[in-house]
Each structure stands twice: as C-alpha cells, then as structure tokens.
Length: 343
Image (cartoon, rainbow, N blue to C red):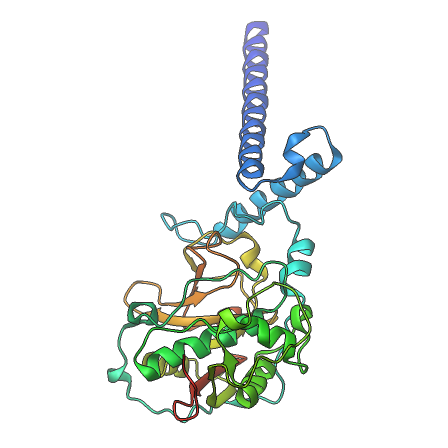
C-alpha cells in the first residue's frame, strides 16, 4: 500500500513539473514573439526590457494574443486563422478605438433600398473584382489622421472615373477634402455623405496639386484652371433588407464606399470574417468586388491602413449576413465626363 501511494505521489509531482515546464515554455515563446514584433515594428520600448512601458506593452500583447485565439475558435477546423498578431498587437482595444475608430460620423437622412438598379439573378456574375480592370489605385495609409470618410469617397471617385472614361484610375486629392469640407471635421472625423455633398459641389483636383499631409490644414483653394473631376451624382442609401443590391451595384456599376464596424479588425490578419462583427459604424472603406464561388461568399474590401495590414491592405467579409453593418451607409456615384477638365 505504501509503495502504491509513493508511486502516485511521484506521478503527481512529475505531472506538476511537466505542467510548470510547459507553462514556462509557452511564456518564453510568447516573450520571443513579442520581442520579434517590437523589433519588426520599430517600437522604441524594445531597447529597455525592464521599463514600465515594455512590461505594459507585453501584457497588452499577451491579451491580444489570447483574444485572437478566442475569436478564431468560432471557425471550422482547418480554416485559415483570421485573427492574430498584426501591427496593432501592442495596442489596447481602447487605444485602437481612439486612434482609428472614434472619428467616423454615421450619415443621416439616408434612403432605404433605392438604387434604381434592377437586374435578374441569373445575370449576376459569380465574382467581380474591379482591381482586374485597373481602376483601383494602390492601398493608402491614413496614418494618424481620422479621415477614413474622405479616403473612401475619393477612392470611389477615382474608380468611377476610370470605369466611365475607360482609363486608368487617376490619383485625386484626399487632402483637399480634408482641408476644405467644412461640413466635416478633417482628421477629427466626418461622414461619407458629407464628403459626397462637398465633392458634388466642388469636384476634386489631382493629388499632385494638393498633396496628402495626414493632418488638417487651411483650405488653400487650388486655381480654378487646374484639372478637376466633377460628379454627376452621388447617392447615399441603406440596403439593410436587400443586401443583394450591393452585389448588383458592384457587378454592374462599380466600387462603392460604405461605413462599417471595424472593432474586431484590431486583431485581423487575413481570411474571411464570418463572425464577431457588429453594427456600430465607426469606419469607412471602399468595396471593390465580391466572390460567390467558394463555400463562403465574401466582399473584397480596400482599407486605408496601409499595405502592412490584412491581406496587403485588404479585408474579406462574408456576404449575406450584413456583417460589420456594411449595408447601413452605402454610397455609389457617377462622374460628369462632360464637365470635367482633364490633365
């Protein structure tokens, strides 16, 4: 009997030692991952691992890793991970929200389900990607300027110019909209509808005539003799009860600007977002296409957080579930080729 108890005791001690060793190894691996992250993203605190800032950021990093693991549990076995370590991995949710998601102002007075477009289901292609047509410019980075509202609208004007003129997309000025649209608040926030209204009235100059500075400046009204793209129409609608109309717009008209809830994008690394995305509109993006051919249909979304976010700056969100609230604040537009002055 004594021998039996001794064996059990040694077994328990062995398991405890193994468990402690495994925990120590996991912590070491996490520390290594954090150090590699900090070096890769040029974090200044990496130079002093004993500083309070280093320890604080390590704990935030650890919480983000745990959150990502929890979010990924909803996906089927074998699925590509959607959440993980990205360039925001040492930011708390509060910091991420304050820096990227606190400035969007949802549009007001939107009409519902009124695109005026009617197409038969069988006519809709199973996929559409406007990047293949050369009318989507490279992904931009808004930096610390909270002007997603301006980026999304200017990007859509560029694309529609390319489509309607059968040409490459021009590079138009986001900064002019940031500085001059007094119905919005520059880098402090704004709405897609506000940007739409200003662009309809004033048009947009080329970016080399009014370069991006990533901060709100004084409006210096470029010369009226400069080339400018004018709009013929800019519609802001809701499609909360008919998401299929978004596919019609994308397939038969062109890219669109939408407001979305990007809260969980804090930890996004790639793949198709299928869960954990709600309707608290706090960001604006451009949708440039969709794909219905796989097991999970999805939208192709161009963001403005640089190419070192997501899939080279793109995010994929499941179609058909109104995920991220992307049917609540939708904008499509036409340029006026008869009025425009071109370089």
